[in-house]
Image 1 (tube, rainbow, N blue to C red):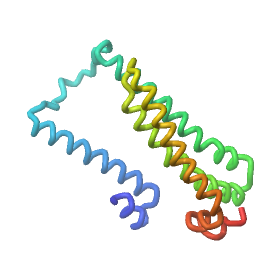
Image 2 (cartoon, rainbow, N blue to C red; image 1 turned 135 degrees about the vertical axis):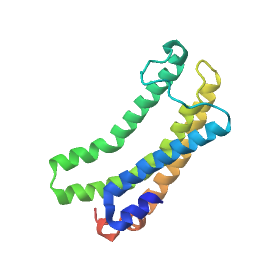
Image 3 (cartoon, rainbow, N blue to C red; image 1 turned 180 degrees about the vertical axis):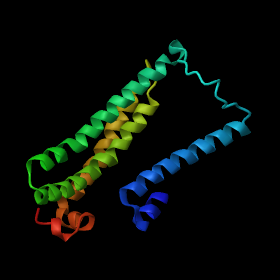
Length: 170
């Protein structure tokens, strides 16, 4: 809501970035207040920075590395084609391609959340992981296949609704 307000007031991209900073600060304040209500301490221990006990956080670090890798792969998948087109084509063609690519990303992002939830529910060494993986494939197939079917059956209508009639010929 803050981002929308700042962008509407004319702050454009800077307003959206300021809104992200405000949201981060607000979440930090919320966490600190909630910790205090629960009787926990959030005081900093001096001014020296020290590393945590690496043995105790090793499982979390491995999970974080896996999450980072998946996030990077996702980001590369949905942006590399637009970057290549912007590099090799004129601005008009690149703009048209970016619009059409945005429509295709609807399916990508709609199904991508399934894998985000899947990663959060993985239990290392558990046989239940295969069941979760099969269910996520099924959900992805149903959601992505359903969206693909609608896009394939009514392409002009979808493009007109999402991007405008200018993009329909492309």
